[in-house]
Every structure is written in C-alpha cells, then in structure tokens.
Amino acid sequence: MKAIKRLLLNLFSHLDLPLLAIVLALMGIGLLTVYSATSSDGFDKLDKQIINMAVSFVVMLAVARTPPQTLMRFAVPLYVTGVVLLVGVALFGVVVNGSRRWLSLGFTRIQPSELMKIAMPLMLAWYFHKYESALKARHFLIASAILMIPILLVLKQPDLGTSLLIGASGFFVIFLAGLPWKVIIGMGAAAGAALPFAWTMLHDYQRRRVLTLLDPTSDPLGAGYHIIQSTIAIGSGGGLGKGWLNGTQTHLEFIPEKHTDFIFAVFSEEWGLLGNGILLVLFTLLIGRGLAIAAAAPTLFSRLLAGALTLVFFIYAFVNMGMVSGILPVVGVPLPFVSYGGTALVTLMVGIGVLMSIHTHRMLVKK
Image (cartoon, rainbow, N blue to C red; front, side, top):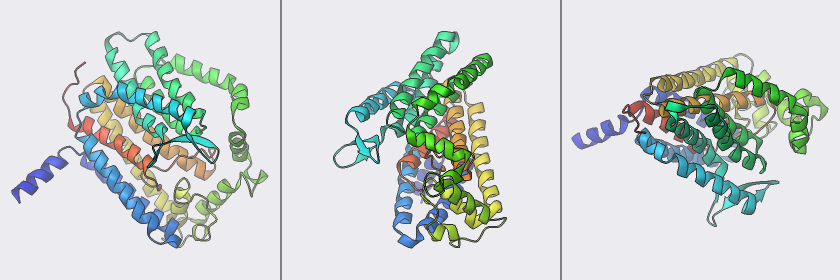
C-alpha cells in the first residue's frame, strides 16, 4: 500500500489539479456528445475515442514530468524535423480528397503539420529566450521568417485551418515577446491593403467558403449546407435543449461532420443555451488557468510558451464555435477536447502537459 501511495503521490505531484479537472470535464462532455452523434453506429466511435483519450493522457503525463529546460533543448530539433517532414509532404505526400497533407510510413500515415502546432511556439520561445538581454528589431524579423516557412508549406497542401493555428501559435509568442503596437497596427493595415491580392491567391473552395459565409442561402445544398444546418441545430436547442440523444437535426443526419468539426452543433441542439454557457465557462476557466501559469512562470521561455499555448486553446475554441455558428468561414478546426479525433487530441494534450510542466517545475531555465 505504501508503494502504491508513493507512486500516486509522485504521479500527481507533476499535475496541476485545477487544470486537469477542467480538461477532464471537457473530455467528459466530448464523450457524451461523440456517442450521441454516432449512436447509430453503435459503440465503435466511442470506443476509439476512449482509446484516443487514454493515449493522449499518457502523453500528457510524460510531458508534464519533463522539466522546461529539457523541453527547450528539443525546440530546434523538433522545428527542423517538422519543416523537413513538411517538405517531404510537398514532394512525396499522400493525396486525400484533393489535399496533400500526409506522409505514408507503410504501416500508418502521419500529418506533420500537427507537429508544428507545438514545435512553432517552442522554437520561437527558445529563440526569444536566447536573445532576451538584447532584443532588437532584427530578432522580430527573423522570428517572423521562422514562422512563415511552415505556414507557407502548410498553405500549399492546402490546409487553411492548420496554417491558421500554426500562425496563431507563433504570432502569440512574438506578440508576448514585446512586439510594438505600432508594428502590429502597421501589419494590420498592410494585411488589409493586401486583401485583394490574397483573394486571387485563394483556392476556389476557399473563396466559396468566404462567399458562403456572407450568404449561405446562395448555395443551400452545396457550399452553404454546412452552415445552414448547423445554425438550425443551434437555434432549435433553445434555452434548455432537446435532451441527450434527442437531437433531431443530429439523428436525422442533417448535420455534416457531426462528431468532428461540427460537434458543437450537436451539443447545442441537445443541451441548449444552458449547456453552451457551461461549455463557455469551462473554456474560460481553462484559458484563465493557463494565463495564470504563464504569469507565474520564472523565465521568459516558460512565460512565452505557456502564454502562446493558452491563447492557441482560445483560438481553437473561438474559431470552431464561430464557424459552426456562421460568423466565421468553415476552416476545419476541431472543438478542443470535445471533437472526435486522435492526432489533434494528442497535440492538445501535449500543450496541457507543457503547461503542467511549467507550473510544477519552478526552477530557473539555464540559458
């Protein structure tokens, strides 16, 4: 008994219990909603999601036990590996549904862009930590170049949703490192001026998504179908929802991708405004806890990494809920810890593990 008790104390000493409780609550909501969305198929998807959660939890435990100074040593190798794999995707990648996003290893396929969601903030946090005592304008320019290389490679696949998340994870590090507001405003003005050029660079399906956002009824059975059906489901949930397993839009198969990207519509229909409020509170607590960990971190590397990862969780939730609600274009971003999926969940839990590592290892990181 003493050995088991000692093992449990050693295990939980590397975990931030408030953060763990929030994540487990979101995962519990995810399991209920995934089962409801896929109940016509039996327990197959539910069983797979439980396995996905178990694997991701083990990964989180391993990362949480890894000191931040060790994580920092992985920054450059992980980033370089990610870029090399993305180049490999561009040259030898597997094409699925018109997109070249995967590398075949024979026994399985991997999506290297998922690796960059963690490698990017890790790399930039390491870079700014290295030059902390003498940051100049050129360092921000070099950091921007480090950020743009994988973004352009992922856009070429094409994968707008993942490139957005990689871009956000890198931008948040640059912003938290002290990017001047006048530069941010200038970048915003430049981006606005470049919109006409950017429009010509978009793929046809990406342009249709933007136009559909403005008027989903222009193509109700085509590009606008996703948004129309998801907003109907959200609205039909009312204040208290229709009840678990009682969503008509869900079980009559009107909602597309209902267990992955559009799972928020399933949840909204069955649990209504009350359920959505609880979900928003949980995400707010998650983001608040992550920012608190970032604020208490002892080094620039830890602060930048924790802050960026936390804000990426916000982007995940905001973009998913926004696209399902019809206020943002459909870009294929899952609802964190709720949507069905293995790779994305592991990536998210790595981020949670990093936050726990930063919180529980309070020693200074050596430069």
